[in-house]
Image 1 (cartoon, rainbow, N blue to C red):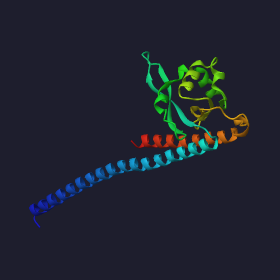
Image 2: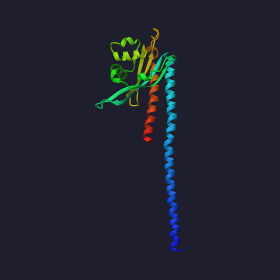
Image 3: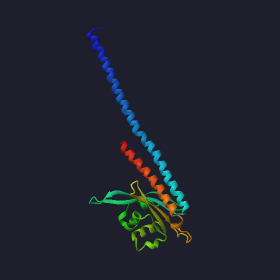
Image 4: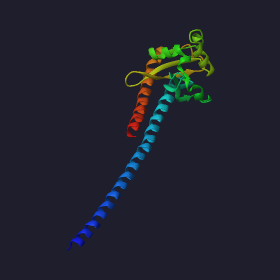
Length: 219
């Protein structure tokens, strides 16, 4: 084989290799694109499963405690004030309620924590906050009284929710719209059950948080 033939053969081999490399590159790009899409569908299934677990727990304890409504509030920083100071707020992310009532989620969204400082202090520094008759807090928690009164609350039991580090990230609010029967002592008879309920919600919310964290790392 003469030199020209060798060069020509080398040229064809080079072209084939280049085409092969280009083909492999685009295959890799396509596979990576598909792989990036797959976790989204998987995340939807996983998150929906956790959402269902949260609602199942809330509905179970609503019936056990004969409550009218249960809300899961989470603290967040939705916006900033004009001086860029964090405008800390709380919003209800989950809600279950007795048949015949209406949702109040819209009224429980982006509530500034600054308007209910005593309630937030109690929630973040105590194991729980219990009020058998909302009229008892009228003088001590005026804004909390007005808000809870506006959504029909007569009695409430609030329990803080924590992250893995023990930081309070929100709370579960259990509401009764009518007076609790005199013979029912929630603190004595149901406190352990309510704490177990809050613990289960903490676990589920932490799982949701871990999902979000892992999804951000994949981006």
